[in-house]
Structures are given as structure tokens and as C-alpha cells.
Length: 334
Image (cartoon, rainbow, N blue to C red; front, side, top):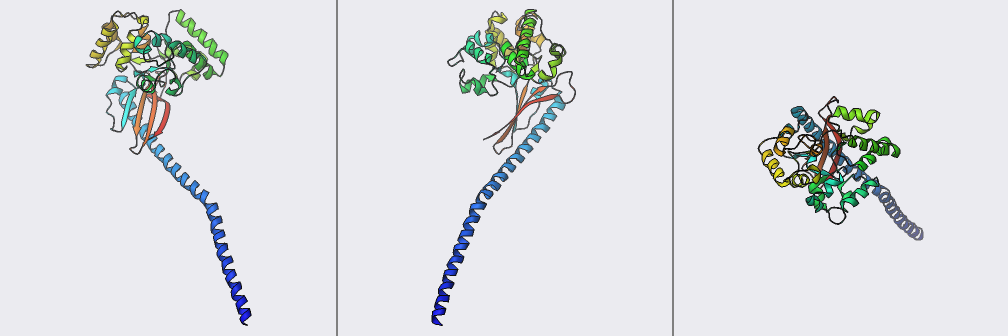
């Protein structure tokens, strides 16, 4: 009996160890199986919270944009006077130069702008764009300008104006819009013919007619509005572009000083600008400089490190609905 009991006890001991081992084995297997699932669940929770925060911020930006639309009907002077909440910022995108669209003489013939280049030249930037390379982010031009210069003076967030867009950039865009390189090339030829004729597309109706059947493909990124608003153009850039020989301004520094001093006192119309500068209506400057804004950027933060940036442009006169058309929406985390 003792022996049996001993054996039985021993067996019971082994049985317990086996049982304990089985528990550890099952626990280990559970950990091995549930670990990734727990991690995935946590990641999904984090993603869901992030997504919900983005949705709330996007809804808040949409509501604010609707308020601005109702209060201003897209008028630039009234947009600039709109009383924004503390966590929002509104900027005229046309206060800077769009590196995708800028004509080469703007970059080459102004000593001040030429001085911003770090190493490569305006001709090399032109060659870069001719290779069908158009930036979607300012870092696309980091070989030509340093980071601070890019953020201070340049943008990619304004529509192109057919009257003053670089012709190779226009070809690239139309190739993309139509899905055909030969079509893009044909549109570049049409643009050359328009410029050689001395004509310009003065408003949205004429622009629409000029594009014809391709208008629906181009209307989102095309504008008849001059690329810069004289009331908001960065002071450094205003002085710089007025010095371009193309505009035949006798004293660019004085002209820029007059505009800057007057716009501090009141909002300037095109008629005011022509009087102040003494330039005729056919001067090439008026293709670039006006009293309206082709695009805006609304920035909004939720106070927890999440920000939204909405780029939008005023609705064309022929379009119905809200005063603005959204171009891009970007989120960023800090």
C-alpha cells in the first residue's frame, strides 16, 4: 500500500507539474495569439480617435468657411476684414509667387528674386519644369531655394492664370488634365497664338469659351484673376516684381513705396493702382497684379496638436452654389 501510495503520490506530483506546464503553455499561447490582437486593437482605437478628431476639425473648418462665404460672398476686401476666431488664420495665397506657374522673366529679371536662388538658376528651374515636373509640395524646389525662402516667398496653392502662366507648365497641366501629351502640346501652341495676337482672357466667360470642350477638365485649376492682389502681395515681392524690365516702370522702388503706403490706409482698386503708377491699361503688369485674390488658405487648430489647412478659391461667376470652391485639404500633427 505504501508503495502504491508513493507511486500514486509521485504520479500526482507529475500530474500537477504537467498541469502547471499545460497552464504555462496555454498562457504562453494566449499571449502569443492575443498580443498582436491587443496591439492591433490599440492601434485601431488610436486611429479611430485620430480620425474622429480630423472629422470634427474638418466640420469646424467647413462651418467657418460657410460663415465667411455668407458674410463676404467671396469679396476679397470683405474676406480680409472678416473677424476670425483665435484658433483660425486666413491667408491670401496670392501674397506669394507660385513656382509652378511663374514666368521665367519674373524669376530672372528681378535682382531681388534672383538673389534668393541658392545655387541653380532660373533657366535651370525652367528646364526642370519642362521635364513635366510640377511640384505638389514646395520641397520639389528645394534644389533652387532654401527652406526658409520657400516658406516665406513662394506657394503652390494658387490657380494658374492663362494670361501669365509659364507655357511649358501650362502644357504639362493640360497633358495631365486631358490625359494626352499631344493635346497638352496643342494647348501650348494655342497659348502662344493667344499671346502673339496681343489678346488676353479678361474674365471667366472668355476663359471658358477659349477652353471650349476642355473647360470641365481645366476649370478647377484655371483662373482669369491676376495672380497677385496688390493689397496683400508680400512687400518684398511687390518691390521685386515691379523692378522687372517687362513692366517698364521708371522708378520701381518709389512705385512700390506708394502702393504700400496707400494700401495701409485703404483698399486699392485696379483704377487706384493705375492712377498711382501712371501705367496704361495694356501694360503687362496688369496681367499679374490686380485687386482680387485667386485663392485663399484657411488654417485651423484643435488645440491638441492637430491642424487643418483648407485651400480654396472664389466661385466663378458662372457657377452656382457657395462662394468658394475647395482646392485641397491637408491635415498635420505637431
